[in-house]
Amino acid sequence: MSKEDQRIHPYPVRLTKELREKLDTAAKAAGRSLNAEMLLRLEASFSELSTDDQPMTAAQVRELIREELTKAGK
Image (cartoon, rainbow, N blue to C red; front, side, top):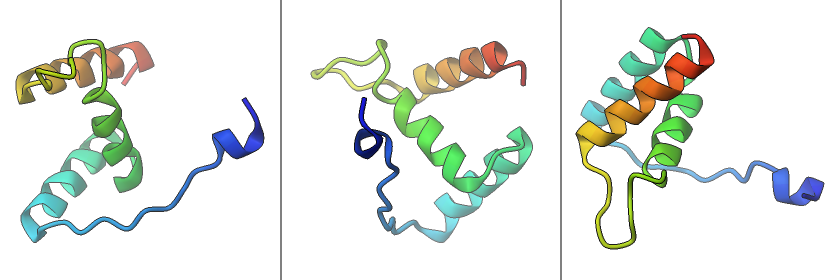
């Protein structure tokens, strides 16, 4: 993988106040930045639990996040 492939590409995101607050709360509770929380949740939505036809449910996303946090020792 080249350095260009690994580069983080900024992308502005518009969030409702309520969603931003939820993400902030979750990030603080997990000891992560808002950006890290958003990336974790986005990556989880593309995990092996989802398919092109059936996106992951919120419960599946929560379970995957729990599993990843357990692996990371959080």
